[in-house]
Amino acid sequence: KHQKLKLDLDFLKFRSFEPYMKSLLERLCKIRPRIAYNPYGTVTGRLGIQSGSFPILNVAREARRAILPSNDCFVELDFNAAELRVLLALSGKEQPDIDIHEWNAKNIFKEELKRDEIKKKTFSWLYNPKAINKSLEMCYNKKYVLEKYFDGNYVNTIFDRKIRSDDHHALNYIIQSTTSDLFLKQAIKISKLLKGKKTNVAFTIHDSLVLDFSLSDKPMVKGLLEEFSNTELGNFKVNISGGKNFGDMKEMKL
Picture 1: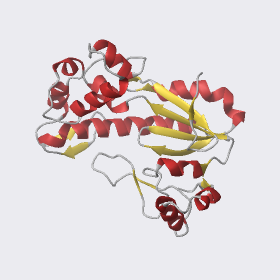
Picture 2: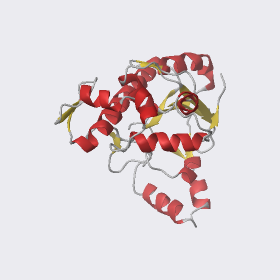
Picture 3: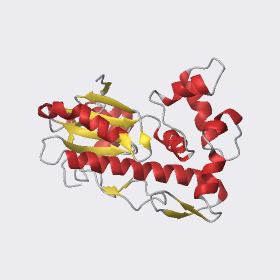
Picture 4: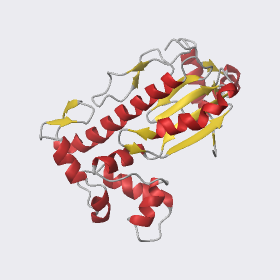
């Protein structure tokens, strides 16, 4: 929250004929250009945003081009399907080292479906407590996870969070809270590795860590990626991208 956020106000002004851009520009005239998180605003511990902060968690995609790095570029480390991977780990299964939706296509869905269709089917099942899919259940064992981490009144996560819950919300609380705490632990590890460097943590968006990156720290990229991937629940595949602004991020190949 003490870091000044660099913004391209000219970009917003140029598109101020659009209602959203005009509203964001007016809002920015009333607040400090900073990002201040609220770690106590949700029952699961997932980060929220304090009043008066730049709305990084829900800023529209078309406005992301106005967010600029203070160094040379942004580098984003983003867990591949973090919540699915957390459920897989809590089910006692190893992490696939490929895109999890591609893995589901090969190992669970035997029909010819596109990636987006598989993703939609998987998350529809995941977040609906009444949904039944025997193929998915054999791998992502929701029943086992619920019995282990929900006592009927409280969710108790591996990170010692105790959350009051009903049956309907219990699995969502387990997965979301565990994912959030796991991600924040990784973000803190990266922040410590960057101590004394020009590169710093710019901001986070749920399970995505965005670095304000200095090219002088380029030799660190592979190590940062490996450290971020190495979690307490196994090695999570991480997607990495970079760009001159937050709206034009492109996948990086290492």
